[in-house]
Each structure stands twice: as C-alpha cells, then as structure tokens.
Length: 366
Image (cartoon, rainbow, N blue to C red; front, side, top):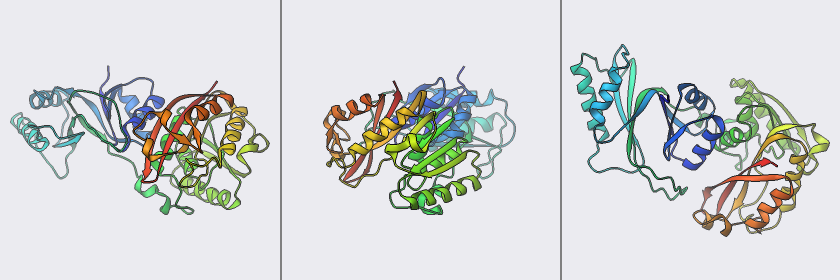
C-alpha cells in the first residue's frame, strides 16, 4: 500500500511526471505536482530526481473538508515520539476559505490536547500539511486535472544542492551550459536504471556531471578540444563532490561516433549546438540526423535517447504539429527520428526566454 507522498518542484510538472515514471515502477499521480508511492520508491526519487521538492514518508492524503481532524488522528496513530512542528505549504492556486497557517495551528492545537509538545524552531519531527490545488500556469502548460486534496506527512527530504551545482560554480562553464535540474532529468530519462551513458555533444559536461553523480558509466565526446578538456575538469569536480560514476571524454564528431566509441550504450542524451533562432534555420539539421543514426548504431536493445531541439516560443502552447525546428516541420523531424531507427514516445516544450523555447524529445530504439 502506498504510504509516501512526493511533491514535485513547480518548474515543469509534465517533466516531473515523465521523470518519475521512468525512475520508479509504480505510482499514482494525484496532482500535476504530486504522486503517492511506496516508501522505497519515494527514497529512489529523492536520491535521483531533479524535480522533487519534498517527500513525506510516512504520509497520505485526506479530503479538504475534514483535513484538520483527519491529519491529527493520522499523525497520532504513527506513535512518533519527540517534539513536533506543524508547517503548511501549497502547490497551485489559492482556494477560498483555506488558510494553511490556520489549519497548521488548529492541527497543532489538537496535538497539544493529546499531550504532544510543539517546538517550531528545533523539532524532532516536522509534520507537513500541503494543499494540492488546481493550477493554471502558462509558463509550461499542463492539461492534468484533479480536485483539490490535502497531503500530509513527515518530511524526510527537502531538496538537493542544485543552486551550488549551477554552471558558474564549476571549474569550466559557458553561458550556454545546461541548468543542472534539466540535465539531471535528461540523464534520468535516458538511463533510469544506470548503465552506459553517452553524450555525443558533451560541451561543458553538464550531462556528464549528473551521470557521474548518479553512479553511471559516462562517456562524452565533442568536436571542440576546449570542450573536451573543460568537460574532463568538470568530471573531476563531480567526482570530488561524491559522484561514484566513471567517465571517459574524447575528441570527435557526433557523426562519427562508431569510430570513437565501442557500444553498446544504454542511453543517450544531448543538446546539439544551435543559435538563438536555430528553430528558423536548417543549419545543423544534417548534424542532428547524423548523430541520431550514429547513436542507433551503438545502442543496446532497449536504449533511450533524449535530446533538446530549438523550438519557436510562439508554439509552446500550441499543438506540436504547429512547431518547427532547424527550419523543418514536425512531420519532417519525426520522420528523421524514425528513419534513424528511433521511435518518439513523448515530447515536452520548455520555455527558455522570450525568443527561444526547447522541445525535449524522448525516443526509444526500434
């Protein structure tokens, strides 16, 4: 029986659900930003996911109508000792008549009536009450629909050191370096069960860093020698931060991977080079097609491939058929994946800035 609640970060709910579905065998999504699962699965998400904000374990869900009494009773049934802090939070929009602060105070009052000691500064146990409300974000549109519900539980995880891992903190970086959260999500989708991971456009090594921290056997190549040297420096940095994965970085073109590497690889993830308006220009499309074919030649039977393509920001809320990338229509893009031996299983649009979006594509070897 599910006994943990996982709250996703609010940045990209679709990607949160996609990554979670790759990493754990079974769960139930109860909100665009939340799921319930077994405690062992929750621990796995907390250790691997880039898009988990908090984990309640043990935890559960209660109706918004009788949340106060239900949460107090459920917490007391756990028979946990020590002092308690009751704290509230929310995902989604405000709901009229709901005050998280007041609810937390009333739950705390019921616990005091049962002999529990409240300590808000240094508690032995933190009881979190989290309202899961509908949301209508336009940054990354999402069609997930669910009625408001209240999650409760004991906080066992409150995020990772993502800020400290941003590109400027590394030995080598460029302004185009991937955000570590996005890089981790791509690596997790590409190699959810570990194995041999390859980035054929390794650049500054953002994907390699996350693979090392996940304990994978990481391989990266780039045509530019400064990127190869810089990625090696960043790989050492990742190892110094506790990464248990191995790495090998080589110089070479993504269209000649079979001359650089010996397969098979279990997963591929890459962010091919492109300029700000690359979604308008056909420049680089041949490079993408060549990389797709070369990755397929080195892929294991059930390999995943994850890539980011430039995407028009005006199409982020439209159907995928309306978008273009490298000057090509979606039908031309999907046809290129298929011809190279890859079956596209999902896509997610990601807003970067006013003049650029990205399309994250997850494909599997046919």
